Length: 241
Length: 241
Image 1: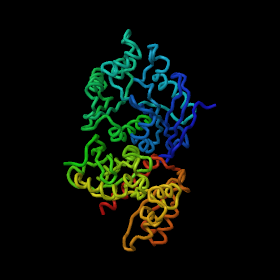
Image 2: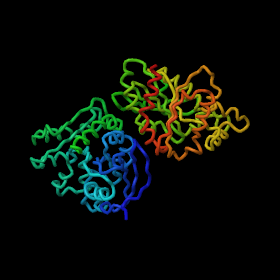
Image 3: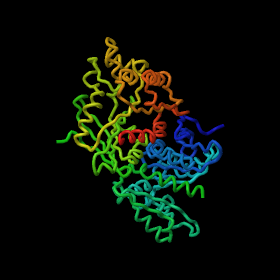
Image 4: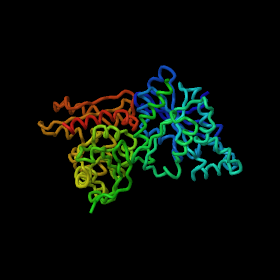
């Protein structure tokens, strides 16, 4: 019995990228995902990066446009590209009745998908996250109000990287690389990078964050592709440490 | 007065990719294209590669999926990605009345587009061509019959790489790199690689062709991306020689 149905498989960079579908109990629907396994996975387990794409993406955007496969092949890493649309929102578990049946991407990404993949594929997991401070930006507030309601704003904080950092146990170390284009059309209104930087300073973790403002780049996959080499290398370093 | 209208512009790999539209006299319609200029183009002319995509592609497929920008940036080359759909066919000038008004991609790629770009952008041209022997495969025969008619099959040969090679002046040297996946679903029926190899042998040009069968790869852009590094390097070597 397998939970994954293979839809397609293409050789890439001496490894293979495979598209699967499966029934998600958390999301109460059929989901698709792409998995890249490097050649090294033929011979045993390899570490994996979960590539969580943006609001309007499917499992294909990051897999096809980011240039990540090449770098993963170089480092012998697996890549997991979950479908994030239409049920992504802000990778949260909705509690408002209108959304709560299907919008449970937090549990899907953190629990259900790894348990399915680890049972069938030779990988372990880490996460790459572009979310900064959704409780304080217009898109975030709109989504959080809709999915979680307004009654308990404390509940919003569990899906907010900046807020979670403030609550993080002092002894837990993190290693975060953030790249942002200075020409990103959402930089000032939605991304709120200074809030993350301030939280890193407040919590004495500036040495655990590398936040780079990249001159002239925008919000497109052309930017992602331009810096992906450093990101995969960053994960490889810590996954293999 | 400019013939190109800028639709978007994204920084990528320290250069920029720009999407343009323009009115094509040859095709009697509006066309779009993407142009990647590396940083080196800020300071003067750079050589260019015309990336001619497949039958169902737009100007975006090769630009977004092939990983070519990274390699072009490395070598300081420009990349031109013309729209090839729906008017591409086999990059020919149709003579059948039903198609001859709009289906003139040969003249568009060889004459019109370079004249527009050279007038406005700091580039020169070369070509990358995946066409092998269309006069002898089902898709080619269907297209050539439709666009050129059946009356003069000699006219078909001017759009066929293998046939053109047979007619090429002995003193004209070529340098051709061909990569094909052994799991390509169109390999035996449509691509007819052995015919190109045979023509290279017949004409004493085996040293001018590198034809590589790549184990296990298929017809997708994942394959293109897996070998693009060698192709851009091949063009760079000859463009800069």
